[in-house]
Image 1 (cartoon, rainbow, N blue to C red):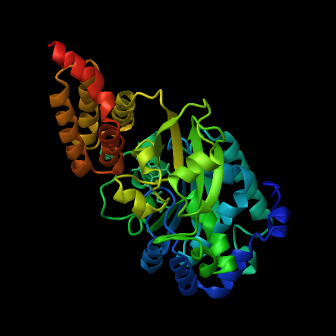
Image 2 (cartoon, helix red, strand yellow):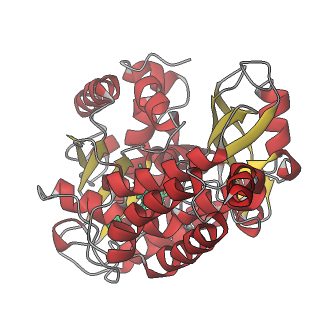
Length: 408
Ligand SMILES: Cc1cc2nc3c(=O)[nH]c(=O)nc-3n(C[C@H](O)[C@H](O)[C@H](O)COP(=O)(O)O)c2cc1C
Ligand code: SF4
């Protein structure tokens, strides 16, 4: 609907109404609105945005920062890219409101290098916002200053993890930092920092313009508002579908997505990126909701759904999860760095039919160690796709195994 290069067009579609109201409200009242909206971080962890902002607002420091996480590394996800390319002022407005709320005057948008069009669109929009008086000194005619800069990543999945992203922004190798201290207390250049996903910032202008209730009216349970769900993989109608939380997985895959592209039966869907669990048809009644997915050992992550038909070999998918972790591990902690490589080897043994039952038990044990012994969610969540494949698609691991073991 909006010409992404035109500030006037953005304003003609209600743009900057949220900032105008935010300027009239002041920090405390904005925090009340954001908290009451129920908005939770859309990058994956689902942490309440209002609480994060309040922590940074209350921190005492000479400088504070706002960082937008646009690394978007999850498989089957593209919502951040679509917003940055199609409606970049929305992200700028959301970050500006964040700056105003917590007392930060500088923000960075960390965009993955695979998104050159998003980088260009964001840079063009930042320049237009500066010209229009919406970035720089005295934004929107107020006494507040806020400015933005785009930084481009270098292609590491782990640089989407917030502390690793901060290391990368500071010019170092993207290695995960131990928490605490939280970025809200000790973030970019050691200063209190709000770090949020693109979608989280993009939800803010609506919440401020229309009020928290208008946003919180959508959704179910503790998952309030809407989620831009991304349908990908072997699916007939792939794309982005924004809807309120509560829609079921079956409705998304069968009704909205139209089943598989190949026309074969849907066998598995991976929800929430490479660290998300595989769900079988039997769990298609799961509503899109943070808690409902967690209760079934899954996660909704950044809202990506990747569909597989009945030709999928779930042993290969389990192996892939471990391989992905081995390739992308930052190497800081042992369960992830070493465990993922041992995981690949052990699953390969299962695939060759070697001592299958013992090796399955070993993989399960290894997953347990990775789950509880890893420093960040890369090592800590890799067990989810592996264990869900073993739990819901056991026949793929047992079929060849039983034959070969019987032969032994
Ligand atoms: C390995 C790993 C990769 C991640 N990748 C991303 C990413 O690409 N984009 C993102 O917004 N969050 C990503 N996250 C989550 C961030 O660490 C962090 O929770 C998020 O930026 C906070 O913003 P939010 O509260 O708005 O979700 C990743 C986490 C991990 C452990
Ligand atoms: S779990 Fe993996 S990616 Fe995370 S800190 Fe440890 S080695 Fe690095």
